[in-house]
Amino acid sequence: MAAANDLDLTFLGPYAMMLCMGRGYVNLLRSNRWRAFADGIKKERGYRCDYCGAVDRRVQAHHGFYRHGLKPWEYPKRSIWLACPESCHPRLDAARIAGVEMLGRVHPKDLGEVITYITHVSSRRSQPTAQSRH
Ligand SMILES: [Zn+2]
Image 1 (tube, rainbow, N blue to C red):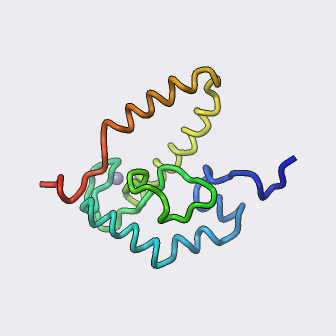
Image 2: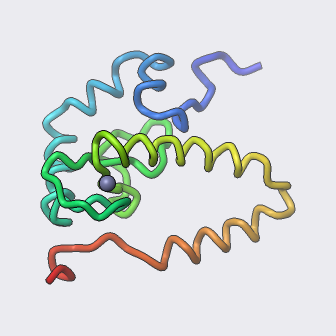
């Protein structure tokens, strides 16, 4: 039986992870390195919320997924989404949790079909860059 520390709880989100794993991850979110990484993405994408399209300098960086052991700035930029702090970011956090739960209900023989669909949908849109913005 796996010890509690071996469980991958990263799908829960940073604040639940703090409760389960200590303050280490949240401290990384407070670090200058994370702020520089997130601020660079915000500036590059014009502070535009990927969910509702609003432009707001308070926009927050949302991790599309979590993987145990990765530092906040070690994720691919294309998995970082920008979201309004009060409305859109909580929706994206809830959607990430729901998505993991729903994927867990897919029969293993159907996972290939689901992954093919997700690959197709995720390639339809990419994050805007300063070069593509007019
Ligand atoms: Zn928004």
